Image (cartoon, rainbow, N blue to C red; front, side, top):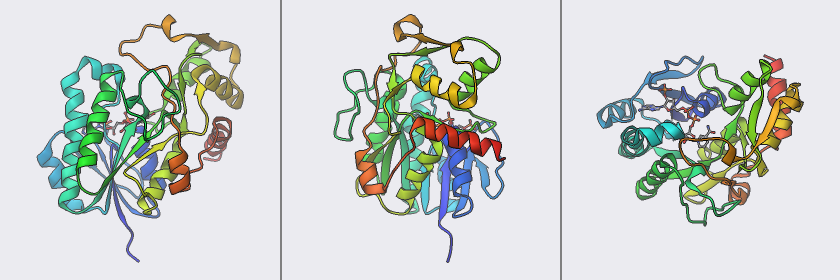
Length: 298
Ligand SMILES: NC(=O)c1ccc[n+]([C@@H]2O[C@H](COP(=O)([O-])OP(=O)(O)OC[C@H]3O[C@@H](n4cnc5c(N)ncnc54)[C@H](OP(=O)(O)O)[C@@H]3O)[C@@H](O)[C@H]2O)c1
């Protein structure tokens, strides 16, 4: 039987890189990069600037994927605030370009959005809750969600803060924490910022369930099973990886200056994905143990 053709935009990014490695044996996988050239065994890699509609149509019409997983974006929350034009071009126009090119060849589009479409006054948001982004990054991702909802054969997956093995090109927030802890420096972590962090391997499992046609709705929340603050997360991480937990300093969001505003709580409810996609993500401790084992077995 012919393998399904999957195109991943943002293959040089944290999520895209992990997806390409997860999917490469089962599917015929292509992955794009923009400024960070990419090589992954068993994956065709190509340069594509999503802000150029012409280039996107050319590349996608040539590859003719069955499914496009759109994970390319400007994800720098502070950077988006400081360069709104660039952020709009990558996150809104870029998504429109990919959506149109996918529709032209009848490919199904999986758009990855963010938990940062939600703001301050809530917790464990469901797909029925009205989004209200607190920063420009979140706003651009929500604008793109609207385009995706209007466009052809597509779905939006709002993924949350992810963690997992460093790709060598991009790391998750664990890269920053590890660097500090390894060099014996204090690491300040919020006690009052709540997310539902997700192990990137579990994000891949959810996206694969969508590729396999299990989705029934146009929008799903894809997050971890726990609502947890950053400091508690750091304590679990230090415990699993054998770092000195005394280096972790609990702070509140008000104590640390940040350029763009960020919500105190954008934890997501994942009941819809559990029900339809059979999504069953690991809790933080379990996921970190599994991550440590896979790093040791390399
Ligand atoms: N990581 C998280 O915790 C998290 C949380 C919530 C939602 N998400 C969503 O998940 C998706 C993937 O995020 P990520 O963390 O993997 O992002 P990332 O590590 O920052 O990677 C971004 C990717 O987008 C590409 N890109 C940026 N501008 C581009 C352009 N103009 N043309 C083509 N490609 C461009 C980058 O290519 P180069 O590096 O080669 O330039 C890179 O491959 C995004 O939609 C993001 O909003 C991520």
